[in-house]
Length: 232
Ligand code: NDP
Image (cartoon, rainbow, N blue to C red):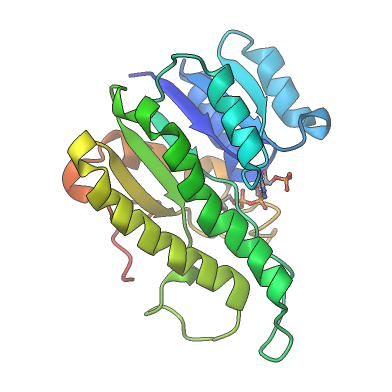
């Protein structure tokens, strides 16, 4: 089964892997990145699948660029919107060293922008066949899982994202749209680092399988990449 997917943050990491796997399987892929000129791997993907991969400049924090993308898409429907772009912020910031502006930047990217993206594109999802919106969350956003403290910027941004997902599940259920917050596992990307437990290929393959079977009853859930429910 194929369709049309729009993915943010596709120049590297999980976003690039999502773009590759969907294109390989014959999907139309709208792959977004904020700096296409330096997105060599993404350009190579477009060259490999020129009829399937369509590149768009998109900094998710810029409303003007979200609007411009919406115009470019014309009357196209989107089966699957993957809000993948994410930002950890400076690492190792402990209590006493938290800075307002740095925190704001992480919240902007991880919490506010996924909702703004969904507000902009949900009408296209509502008229599609699969009607699914994905949010890349993180287990470290789980309050019950927090045993080590710290991580103020990133943890709080993903916890707040989970609440956004829950509200969206309720607000978009009338339109038949499924939304889900996914933890991709600890993955070998720039963010996850080289000691991470799984590869992008393993993580994205599992998440795609999960998404294929996602039901409206599961909408609003916080799931790990293999489909297990994560406690809030
Ligand atoms: P990476 O750091 O490898 O990649 C992050 C991607 O997000 C890059 O493409 C980056 O683009 C993009 N991005 C950041 N800010 C913006 C912005 N303002 N506008 C557009 N794109 C932006 O991370 P991963 O691939 O590992 O992570 C993908 C998602 O999965 C994130 O939401 C992350 O929080 C989540 N996640 C990852 C885990 C892991 O172990 N890897 C674990 C749990 C969750 P640029 O190159 O321009 O900065």
